[in-house]
Length: 307
Ligand code: PMV
Image (cartoon, rainbow, N blue to C red; front, side, top):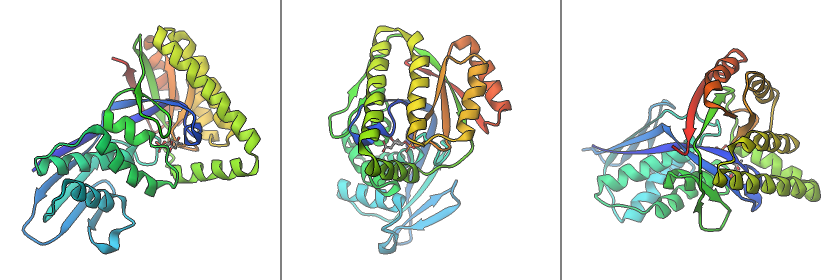
């Protein structure tokens, strides 16, 4: 049996605006992973066991709409092989929560299949394959999830441009809190699209504001001026609120985290649910974690960025 794994991801700054050509900064979340296991089977065909979703998928002509079946087909095509296979997938990354679970599961499948057939694929090739399934989750993905997950490094991402790593001069602590609300990216991205179509000037101004926040954050990270990050996160959150992708639950958690001593906080990913991130001094991280738990977060996590 061969195994492939892939990390989750966190968008630090710039989600949604990134769909409209603005830059975003994302980092891998290596402690949460998706895993895929591949082995040959005696029976004909390919079957995928999605343990967490409690679903078995037979890969055939009627599963064209299924992302896991699609990534399997695309990968075999890319590798130039066929086979009778049993694929199992499992993931620590909560689904529809802004942490890149869909892209991580697809990436794990690509890696496990390549290993099974003794081939290796470059990160750029893996990213391009996974991008095809990202399109199935929502129509206009920027490509940030598949990129940060395939490369597993901190990246500055601009749609349609080669990805570039960004510098983190001084590592820092992030506290992550899950609202427990599954919010498909397809819906928030679609709503932002409708808003933009109705009032392009207003939306473009908000996207420009987000682009400026991203530029400042990148600069602060490169210079080790981490004390600026909290304020920038809070400013990014205000912009996301004006795009109408925040929610009462997100704002409750942010309030609780800020009261407990976080320097700034924002939603991360598609919004309306999913995860909230806080920039927090290491010695306050536990306190923030406890406070957001009491305020209703279903799970919390502390991670170190840049270490
Ligand atoms: O919710 P996630 O983890 O899929 O992140 C989506 C990020 C968006 O900017 C909202 C969409 C995109 O394609 O970049």
